[in-house]
Length: 263
Image (cartoon, rainbow, N blue to C red; front, side, top):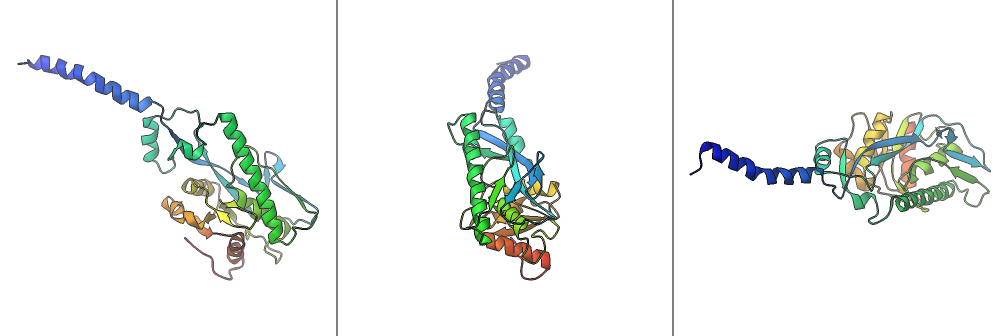
């Protein structure tokens, strides 16, 4: 029979391996990335001193309001994410824990990932230009569009780039702005045919949008439920599936005519 003192010693000694295992689990790197609301940028304005959208070969118009593309910021592909980080992320509404492979292609170096994101951004910008000029029936004209947005990669700004080009060239078609003077934010890929695609991270992007003054958020319709999960107060969701639908919804908001879809 152990004495009381002996039992205490036995418990303490037996507990040491368990404590070591817990400590190892808490601080060992895990295959996750922790994301948070990132920067937003007004595509109708300037970024780092340079205009985001520059157009030549066609008259442009002065715009009011803002069209803000949104981002998320995630821990880097070589960052150490521990169990403690994961647990903390699960219990915070301004954080999201994502499989690292869903954020960064598995097995790629940091340089390869940056190159991949840059290529995706370039493809998105090219598709946005083609979609906008097609919408405006300027596809065969000698119109040159240059898009510059520093320190951002990926394809998710496609929809906002397209709307920005249309607003600078055409507005709402009646002398007004697509934004109606509002700060409108959003996310979504775009293809040449004007189809809007899902992007992920919308619950964090809505927080970034509201933080930076947006009152309307254009969201790919397939991601309505995700966007509603942590929707900030004062931000109106407008689901879209096509460029035409996005323009129609903004025009209806601007002039008060027609229906505006909601999630």
